[in-house]
Amino acid sequence: MRSIIGLDEFRSARRSLFGTVGLVPTMGYLHEGHLSLIRRAKAECESVILTIFVNPTQFGANEDLSKYPRDLERDLALIAPLGVDLVWMPTAEEMYPAGYQTWVEVEALTKGLEGAMRPSHFKGVTTIVAKLFNAAQAQKAYFGQKDAQQAAVIRQMVRDLNFPLEVVVCPIVREADGLALSSRNKYLEGADRSAAVVLFRALSAAQELYEAGERDAEKLRMRVKAVLETEPRAQLQYVSCADFETLEELELVKGKTLLSIAVFIGKTRLIDNFILG
Image (spheres, rainbow, N blue to C red):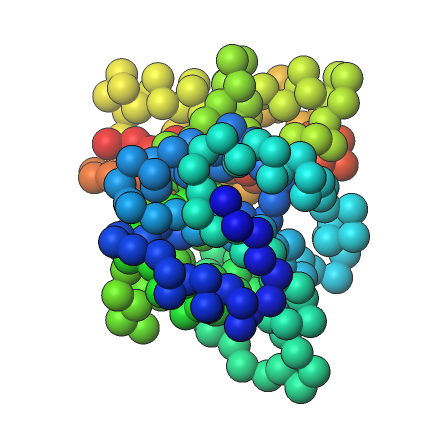
């Protein structure tokens, strides 16, 4: 495993890789969800690149960029046994040099859900992912289903900009009690950690209603809200029952559907989702 910071050195090292190359973009502070992406990439590709970059442009003015968890030594120790070929850890100064002014934006898909709550977020996400795709020249790129809107937006960007790669979206990895793994789970302590499982319980309750035959999207949303209201530490930001591809809110659930939520548990903002149908 070779660890690289500079872009020129990375491009030189990339030329030494053979066969199908898989890219796993991350912001570090890795957990089992990230490791599952690496294992999937290793199973499907001859060479694997992992990137670690806390992207400043996807954080809003009042968000947690400065305190976002970072532990590079820990991250490198976790991935060392997994057979990653290259780890690229660019600096913000190299990715966004003085005078930087070029952005990539996906329009309709970024208007709702996370885009409505975090207006500049996806502009930063799509720009940095496009830059990583351009540098890595991979044939496959691996993302987690937990960031469901992000995955949809990146799929759209790849189609629209004719990137010659496949976007592979892998299942959410959860704790034993159902909490979706996230680097931000580090912020959860004591009663907040216990309360956080309410997201999984709320989505599960709506899924049970769906599996019993309910197709009224608003009734599914209301079921999620009802369960969340039983947890005093939970503050709902949104609940969505939307078409899986377009992310447009539904009245009736007919095909593949994304049921998603954003919830504050204390000061920690968590997102989660289930796929129906």
